[in-house]
Image 1 (cartoon, rainbow, N blue to C red):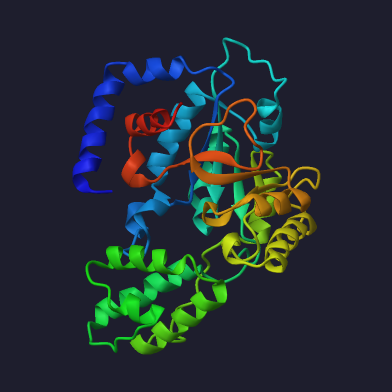
Image 2: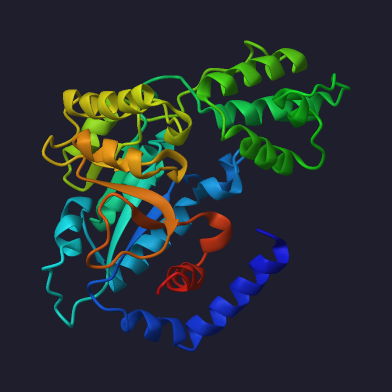
Length: 343
């Protein structure tokens, strides 16, 4: 977010919060309205490097401030309770508060270290969506591999050959590392995972970092997942096997990502087979994918479409509100963002 826009939102949200405008708007929201919040990483600022996208994290302090405010002003429910809220025959108690569901995408290791203790301390539920092949592994997302390669290019600061390929377009990008990373990710997101991996291998070879990426534990282990399952506070769902953008895959590949990930969650004993939620990687879906998700045995699925959900909303195209540090670092900013998409 641009500095000017960020400052303006911070200023106006603070004014509206301190004068009670935002609170009055929230108190007027019917109980049949609900918001699903999206978080990714929970990281202290000291661990946030240039390779981590700004839209990917909040600090533990920010996350705890959110949890406290949400607990006092919303009914925070388990995702399993959402289906009854969305049913057309659901009757709202006129005095009830709007409901909220906290979701965490990707299953990063920092969730267990920083977010889980906060949620357990405040006895607040959430659901974590897992890309099953990454859990308990030393694999990293291609976006993080790309960030490391681009960072290496910046540090070495040496001329590189230009090409007309995707790799060449990425090499030709100018500006800050953050800008290059954002543009490069946009260029590659429409590609099949095999093509992305080929481009990354080519780039790594050009900058001399091929095979030199340090292995690290970026994601949760299955033992950690099972430990959290036993608390009845944290639940889990599928984020596919390989975190693949489903609209880039053929039918056979889509079905693999859906069925194998669900089966793995069940075999690891971390979900109730009668209720398994799903999260579309990058939010990408179409009606054929929605049908395949339903046919694969999932009970509901969440997107990245911005907004609240109401009685009668489609269980397989649920809206969410993404939260990260640069747009929700204060409670007024949090409330300002939540109410900005309320229709």
